[in-house]
Length: 303
Image (cartoon, rainbow, N blue to C red):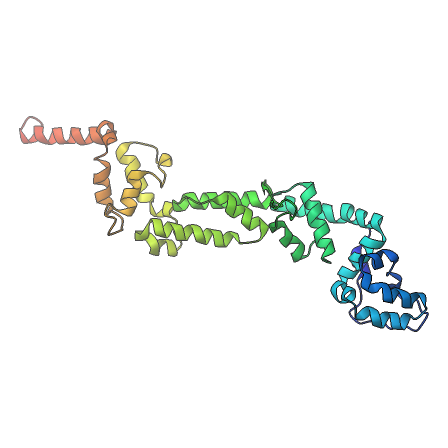
């Protein structure tokens, strides 16, 4: 059974003791603890003299107790006095928990970096699920100065990445979705904040449609009648027309940079018919046929 560091919590209320009475706090001050924290030498001397009450009073005044009180004290005691149990705790309790979190979030991180996070958090008196432990995933390895997390692979990060890519496409803007998805998985931002950033970029790119975007419409929805007209006039597949298409952008943004605003739909249709592709389209043939028929009728050659 793996060691449970939570079982060693130090009470918030200082325990009292009579001289010669065994006390868990005092029993935990082994030579290894004293070697790591020399200020405890006086406490150890009082324990050896059987003066447990005086030892406790002195213990409470030491930087060791004030710094390591609570779970930190329990963790430090385990690490210094029971190294095998400490190693097993990291291996059997911490690493599986942190690996599970990384997998769920879709964070790409090596076992070595997970081990570093586990040991750093343990030294801080944290548990595997503590917010402080999770926050360490955002940090860099102090030895290499390289981020602990090297990328995103599946999990929640993949879902977030796809959501942000789709939103960027729907709002017609370039957006670093991969970096944003990683930040969301690390907890430094939220998916909603990134979606709001995409909408803000879109309003800057298509200022004539700011009110519609604020009302909840995406640029893809707003552009729908323009895309339909574009596809019908040129006889092309509407699915192949993206918001980055130069002709479509002219319709949605206008052609006067000093007066941003969309072209009226009829004006956009006229602009599409000026595209060289229109000459070979069915719409052009139909228009030519209609024009020819009108002339023939005017000449009385066609009823």
